Length: 189
Image (cartoon, rainbow, N blue to C red):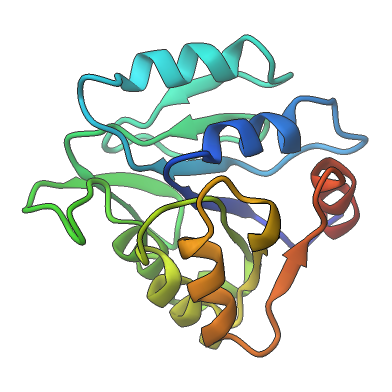
């Protein structure tokens, strides 16, 4: 069994399609909980993102709820109005209501940094397409704390600022091969 106990994903513009590519096929083993912090406006609607992912992912997709414990074989989407954090050693959701960070809610940096304790060693963190630098510092902090960290191939992202910035900060970052995202994840798990 894999030592990965949670998969954290951060992304913004262009990342929903990447998530669909990575998770749309069934996996050969049980997936740990997957949590996706995605920049979106309230008008875009977290429910629309949840419904789009539910239509093509083989596991249930739910909107994260404060106080709820993460469950294997479930995919969670962050709400748009709050910063999403994980507490209790990366097992329970908590919301944080504050100003946008880098003009965005939820903050991917805050989300990633909430798992920088000893739980980082059992965390896979992935940064996908996005048009600002949010997530790069958080991924760097997770990497320093022992997490397995990866970015989408910046050359094939709709918006490459997020993964390119993170890749420039980390020496041992994994670059997820374009069009082989699912196979890469299956191998890592």
